[in-house]
Length: 466
Image 1 (spheres, rainbow, N blue to C red):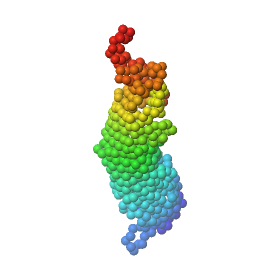
Image 2 (image 1 turned 60 degrees about the vertical axis):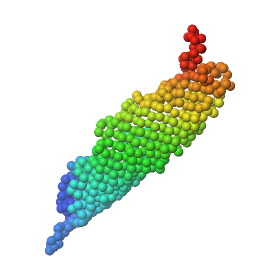
Image 3 (image 1 turned 90 degrees about the vertical axis):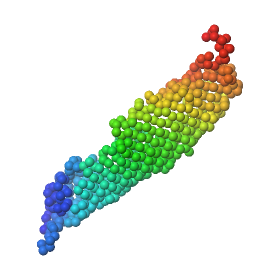
Image 4 (image 1 turned 90 degrees about the horizontal axis):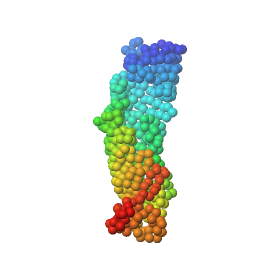
């Protein structure tokens, strides 16, 4: 029997579906209309079920279910069905305010076997799925999302709560993290993170509750840029287990050096506490500054840094930590802070000084980095910096200068006495206070307490005057 359908309610078409498939559609609400034809036939002398075939042109349909209260809408396209299969040919629909096109074939109605190709403006997937009463098996799924190709396989059980067990890989364009992780898009944009990262993942748990995942993510990248700084040979090893995020390794090779860091985050709290460690070694400063605002200035040296940080979530007020810095064989006088200091000292040959070592310790608390022993050491001049800089860039430093007598012997007495005092060890000493900001530092000489620089006999002599 051939039945022509000039215009019909799609909800009524469920009665024409094969029984195995019809029971799976009982929980689905279909709305809309379509037109086409349906052919129903049976060989009466053979114990076979009714055979159904036909074509329906769908116009403006929609559907939803208890598991998907807000399903696809504005569904349009051709549906071709036979007794053993259903085909969707270039069907279009809108879901989540995005438009999609789909080609699909459904076979084996007892446990539907679905082959499909789904695409939108920024998404493409070619997949084969197997549907069971309580789960979806993703036999294969490959595609591209925002120019990031991926492959996935696994299962989704307890469909309403989306319990997943998925494995796969993605070649992730890190610029797309701003779209994938809208909650942290602002800092991602501010840091200017760019690069391509190859990621492999294996995750199990409730899809919507990543804190409860049991997951492993490993990655590598030839180069990642942060604030235009280049990090080569990047490696990543990240785990989520028992409500904790463990960054076992994030390593790279920046500017001839090596970087290694790890972190642990407790995911059981709304404002999760963290502990992070960072080790940086062998960084060539001359190569580094070429990618900063200091490009074109003469600076050199090999830098190392160690630090441990602790805090809660994104709240920088809670950040605390400590660490150390070491720079060897460094020429730093064109570094903004030291350049202004050198101009104030007005000493000859200062621009030729290379610091054999710059070293010191620091602590981080109350949004301020503080040191009491940051020393710059060379044969002609040494500097000792005490104080700090806060996260807003405000400076509060006292720099003690120690200059050898030989280094200033050609300097006029006026220049020498402008801020330096002769000490008993053959050194000229001076205190320089630095305030202002990192971008606009302000310098001034601060008089030394005489009892710190004069021999005892001069203290006695001058005691009546001070």
